[in-house]
Length: 284
Image (cartoon, helix red, strand yellow):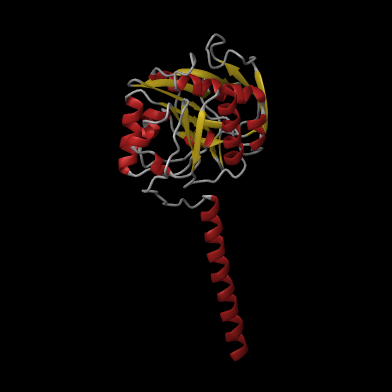
């Protein structure tokens, strides 16, 4: 009886330890969201050229490859275009005084809820008064949002799922308007290898947003509803679009789960063009 009790207690201890470790790992990768909010902004350097702010913060799913690859690409773009860049995971940079120092804010695979109520208000005011915003991949890829304005207006559509079986596939992306300044360098179709492809609950074109890129669903495998949500859309399937919020400019691209994608020259040019447009930096 004593031996059985020891065995049972040992099994219980293993389960508790294993469960705790499992919970920690799920939280670490973002399957269980975190609630980490910064309220003390870092001291910013003096900027002598047009500056872009890059936020790389994950309170939701952590894109371990895309986050560093995206930041490296953005640094290459800034160097090539002669812009100053400040990259951080500190969302307290989203305050009125600091935002005013930047022409564009880029959300690099931001996930989960990351801003306080005041930071939300400051970002919204910054955009309405002429600021620029570019969002990449995971920045529009949460299944739900605590900030309705972000998903309903800033992004414009709710993410509903992505390809999963297989998750990563070659696919053809179509250029909606070959004369658009942001996408005129692209061929159509533009084949992107081994990416994860998002789907959304609605077509942002119905809101008057300008669709830039769409998916050719016949070029890859979709399953409809599945483990990772819905991976297809009825009719047109936008994957990148832009619009204006007040005097500000906003562009979102859902491409970019894989780190390797950020080394594709055409994709780098797309994001460079997006930042140029969002910050009205074309003449500088």
